[in-house]
Image (tube, rainbow, N blue to C red; front, side, top):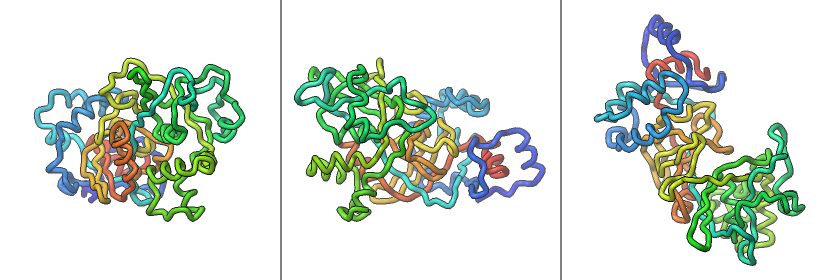
Length: 349
């Protein structure tokens, strides 16, 4: 519920603080809530959320965020800290909330090609333009555009898992000697991603409620020839970079160049949610989630003020959990108090 504050107080706050840094639009609605209106807030582990907040808040540029970051250090009552200095802000448009999950895949691979490891993981070519689309996935895979250019980071044994590695944007390649290559997002070909699940539905192979990442993977593996063609329905192609000196127990590096934390890091649309901000998530579905998370990542499919992608961990088990995340819900951005009220006055600023 929007607070009932006087015109003078609103004007004072407007003079003191900037808006939330989003995109101005008449379709954007902003409301400030009380913490008592958040389902599950009282039972949350606020200390764990505070630790994750501290991993990236020092990289936030606005002074009010950096001041709160400094104040967060050595807090003995994290719940009180959030309640004293933040307000939950609900930012919405005409689109319903949608919350999915993503993970860090682990593939089997090699530094050199073999009869088993035949599918290359590429780094970004230097001639990929930044302002217009480049070659499509089909052209890259069938015309040898990247061959013999020393762009291969590794070779893996499964083209389907390699496709989903590109969707996730980061991952691990486990080598035969037990060593691991950590991969981060390196760029893409400028082509729009098209949903493989939606294409399977369009072809009448599955109904929309039956589609998940695991279902897609299984279908492609059962139908290797038509499956490879199906994957080429999406023209988008992601390139990677090798990340060094990242401990094996740390999560992948997100958009803030810090390791992500399982079930605490959230990918958001930075047009509406500042990277580094705490976000209260209320996800519905068979695996409901009520949790204080930190906006530490982005994604090409994560667009809109009520769109979020939960990082659920590393490996195959995490991938199966992530594949089942596709639920309605709502999320609130925890903003510094002055910034929260300014957002109400000037939504989209």
